[in-house]
Length: 197
Image (cartoon, rainbow, N blue to C red; front, side, top):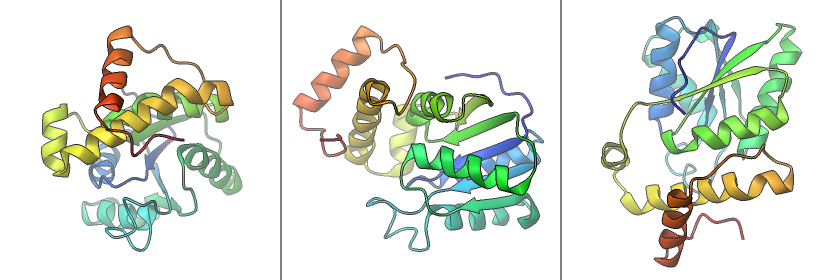
């Protein structure tokens, strides 16, 4: 979304198969963009093998290896979808008694818009910014090492951006015609395993 990042109260690393989210969250913490970092996520079919103890736990340990102090990190290990990531983290922070007026959501590059739309729906009274590792699609695919997985997940993510507002899970986002056309071509080419049926 190309947000100009400003200091916020809390950074929130959204769990996934991509350890780069934790790496970038650690970098942003070390740059001083937020004093507290929450990693959120249980497991999914793409993370159970690689992160057997859960996404939030693995992200926390990775960030600590990169220099983020344990005292600055909280984990929310129950969420299994983006709505839960936001809602459960909001509730965790409310329980700590610390006021939260602004957050920075750190996610996979193709997930920023959905994370933003979900947060605006579920936690409308917080100022939200989004960030992800600054990398192009080809570089991202090389880093993950599985082009089909990335494209399948990208298609599934865009479906959620398109359909979730009508279900009450997110706010409406404009999808340009050329993006919508590419989405339809990818589905027609068989990139559909991450679609919500």
